[in-house]
Image 1 (spheres, one colour):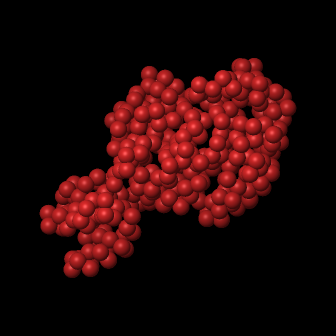
Image 2 (cartoon, rainbow, N blue to C red):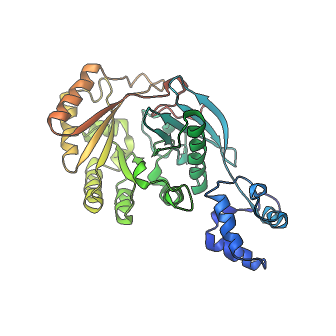
Image 3 (spheres, rainbow, N blue to C red):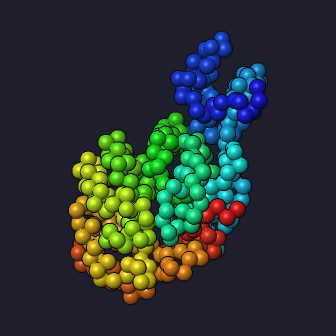
Length: 347
């Protein structure tokens, strides 16, 4: 059978694997063994499955493929950040990032090739959306970064943020399947509390997450609490309005009791006035939240410039006075275009 006609074996559930082996006249427990190799041991070939007979491995090779990712290029920043150009089985490339600090290592993972949204300050938005990533392609990024964390920083991966290329909630089903594998005992066994899904704000899907009872954390790329300002920098806001977003986040907190994180960049001449801060405070007050003020990372667009230190200080002072937790995040990996908003698949 031609490899292009073969099914990716990781699309099968454990039950389907067991049923396949039964149909071949083999013991169903072989399905359990193969499933463990595919997920817990993250095998990239049938040849690696050493506790399975050569005849069985050949039978698997004749019927299936494992469309695993390949790290096509790895770049290391002076601050220890690692950016990977990840080649998919069809030749398309996404980027993922390992971000180290003194206390943790975080994987920034992509969910789509390109992006269907149109945030003007984001390099990924300049790429057309080519396709969603499959659950195994999302999972593979985490496995690869965990190996890099152990190799270069001497400790396993501690956190995951879905802040790479793409809008995670526009690939919701595959995202959840990947997270199930990442957190499951038959996969990586990572706590969902160490996973953050960052969205530009898709109200219908935020409500669905709440209804589905997800256990991971939610971050929202907000950048303005003023409708007209947000629409000017994130044009899709004309469809997914701040009013709709606020109502979906109220619903999220009511259902989950999970605090919301707002990711927020301050730009010179765009959202750096007291009026902008007051609008952010008002948006934060309807549900428990915290704000991450993120340093802007240029993408060769003169319309966006990092705000002054005075403007950042004004945000911090005002938010703290109003009882809102705020953190100023300094970007890492800027020298290799690995910082927030810079992932553009230049390779």
